[in-house]
Length: 99
Image 1: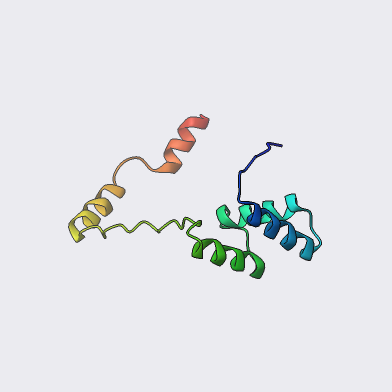
Image 2: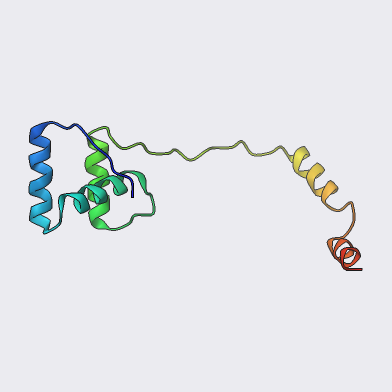
């Protein structure tokens, strides 16, 4: 497992140790949970949401914006529909590959 060394202000280190101790966790486990909450969108739960909000307020949380695409024009959709009906049927291609 990779190791990470961080230089942080002494007061922050003490606060992290205190928060971990208050939860009955090791500093490593607590720091891992904080870092995971900052980068893993699948990490769910009330506690994780609180951590994300704290990180966001501190300017440490990057939020990915959903990409916005323009709708295709009616002409483009009509061309795509027309092209979709052409060509060889998939069943024909599959049967030829097996023969």
